[in-house]
Structures are given as structure tokens and as C-alpha cells.
Amino acid sequence: MDTPFRSILCGVEGNPASTEAARQAIALAGQGDAAGQVHFTAVYTSFELGPDYHRDTLESSLREAEALAGEAGVASTTSLREAKYAIDVLLPESKEHDLTVLGTHGKSRATGIMFGSTASEAAHGTERPLLICRDAPGPAPFPQSILFASDGTKGSWAPAQAVAGLAAGFGATVEMIHVEDGDHEGCDEVLEEQRAEIEKATGTTPTVARLDGNAKKEIVEAAKERGASLIVAGRRGLRGLKALGSVSERVVSGAECSVLLIPLSEVAG
Image (cartoon, rainbow, N blue to C red; front, top):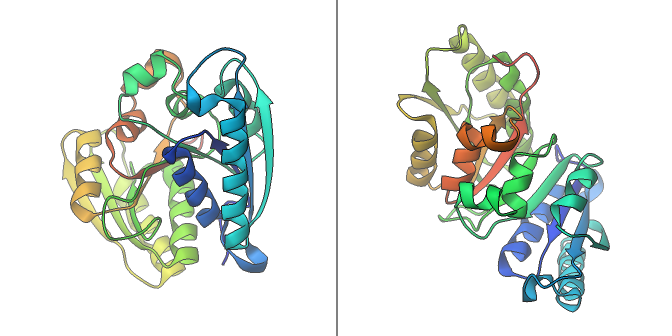
């Protein structure tokens, strides 16, 4: 099974959310000769953050993740690092991988960013593709049901190509959604080309829902109604407090399923 992500970094903590992140990273690595590799990294601190971050707990979690990869036939490596915050290690490491995978404990975007949630920090700090993991809320396992949120810009081709690769590699169904905002000329042509690209890769024509309203609300509600196990969206790389207003940040905070954020290219409008 081929995968668009050959080298995957997965952050490990001592909790169920971290175990689910490991499972999804392993799934995206694929299987067989075309499979990718997963590197599991855990970060412990010299001050008290709770039992999830004790060195012994993290060592056990790394062993568990490595065992899960081995059972799936996926090559993996592990590392245990010390730092004040996990994000201080994961952000620099993310530059060396095709994808970073993290679990999340909740949906509070503002609280997470202001108080150092690793997933929230990564969502507005990384320059690379990022998967924020949650258990699949419906009957379709991860990543078998994909909702692709496209803004219709030329820069949204990077997430479109990731969707095509994932759907082809995993036999996933794809539905597209575009929330009208009137800001992007030529989006009709781009959306049709992206639909055709996904159809070419999968042999199945994805539906395209065109909606008006608040983009975050419409995307999150569409994923819930369709029982999607994965939302794929582009991100513009906003940093700091500006990230609080971005659609991708809001989708991550509100979604009930996993969210894959792919950086838009520089030609994005």
C-alpha cells in the first residue's frame, strides 16, 4: 500500500489519546514494500506536569507504540528527549518529516494555545503537514471516510493531492465541501479540477457540496453529518494570536474526528 507520507513523526504521551495517535500514524504509514516509517518521540520534563509525562510512563508508552508498529509490519524508531515543553522538541523535529501526528485531549482552541497544549501549539506553529488525532466518531474507521474542505484557490492543490493519495492508497470515500466567501475568483474551475484529480486517483467521483455560512461551522457540521473519520483542510501558516481566527484552527478545535492540515502553497489567495 502506497502512502503520501513516507516519514512520519508521532508525539507520544502516557495517555489513550497518544495511543490513538500512534495507531493513526501507523495506519498512514501503509504496508508492504511501499510503506513509510514512523518515528515515535516522547518528551519528559524535569518539573511536575502529571503522570502522563513521567519518564517511566513515557518509556512504557514508547514500547507500546513500537509494539503496535511491529504488529502492523511498519518500520519504526523511538527517542526519549528532555525539554521544558514537548513542542520545543517536536517543532524542530517536524521539519525533518513528511507528517507530524499528535493526539489531543479536548477542543478548547484558545485555552490550548495560551497554556501550551502540544497539539494546539503545533497547529499554529508547524510549517509541515500535521494530523491532530481523535477516535473515529462513526462506523467508518480512520481514514476510510474523508471530508475534503477546499477553499477553491490554486494554493489548495497541496491538500487536494494529499486527499487523492490517501483515498487511492486506503480505498477511502471522499466528499468535498466548499464554503462560499466570494473572495476567490476562479474557484469553480479549481474545484472541478480537484474533483477530477480525486476521481482519477480513486475511480470514484466525489460529491461536491457548496455551502454558504460560517466556514468552520459548516465544515465541522458536514463532517459530523457524514460520519467522516478524517477532515483534510489547508492552512495558511498564521502564527501567534492571529492563528486564533483562522478557519483551520477553528476546525481543529470543533471537529469530532481527526483533522489533517496541509500547508497551502504560496500562490493561495
